[in-house]
Length: 234
Image (cartoon, rainbow, N blue to C red):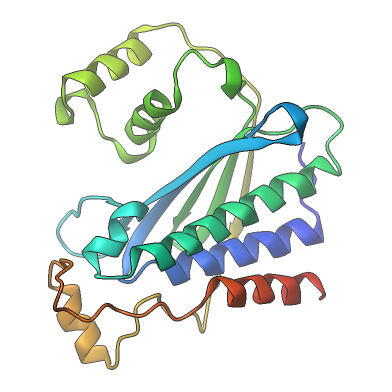
């Protein structure tokens, strides 16, 4: 069983704040995937993506984190710095677990935030020698967590899902963590001047235009780093 130390819980809190900050509209659910793979000579590789479900009466399509800059007219380069900082925080989380883990360390996590609940699923799959490649695992992950099934995708992705659904399943170690979540005083990445402006913008489909002023990133990568360092000194 994983040991969720005080330091690890502090990292959870920072991850939550970073996620809330990065989403520029109201939302109901969020699903995040991240992997960290140990390579020779101490190098690491991996990936991160998340999808959120916008709040609304009608069922909304999941929004991919990498769609946010164009959807909300945010500077893509600056926004990707926030994504990178979030991934680095998850890498830090893994290294913190390594200090107390006697066996192997997890290779990937799925974070779910819904109804003020923060859930983390830790998986110990051997991703370096996995039957499915990174792209294929992404398609399978969307099926499992977002419900994007064979009838909703093209032929290539449908073939991937059919291979997964009809193939043999390999069981690997999995650990789970769940806690309540309470976030306050976190501004979104997009600076809205008034509540009315927010509500009006929420109804629009954003597009990047040359003559349109970009929404501003409120928190720089350096400020995030300082926030994390301050949190670590507590």
